[in-house]
Length: 139
Image (cartoon, rainbow, N blue to C red; front, side):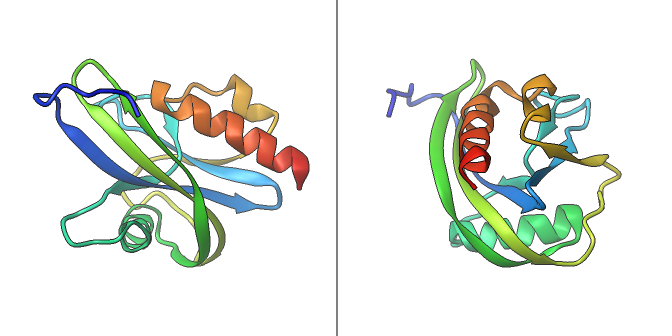
């Protein structure tokens, strides 16, 4: 873990790496958001009193209309942007009910492991992309 300045806000985020047929679901960040206009793995902030799996289930239902039926911890990382630090709790989502669609109007897409290298992600997501490619190459 790297040292973080106590004045910098740390945002705890539950992230879903949603897999189907060796493809990963991505959502496009709104241009008005931090790191906007880049593709991301869906998820959102962990609220006070929530566990990461609870936050992940709530966020994925609110954002992309799916109900998580099977997930497991995949990795955790902390990334310091100049304006804030994000603590990402990343879960593999291997089972869900519903047809994913962007409830907030955001475009979604399924991407293969090889496509991930050509897609622009927020800086904090690069280690996730590498880990997914490693994981999919072994499955």
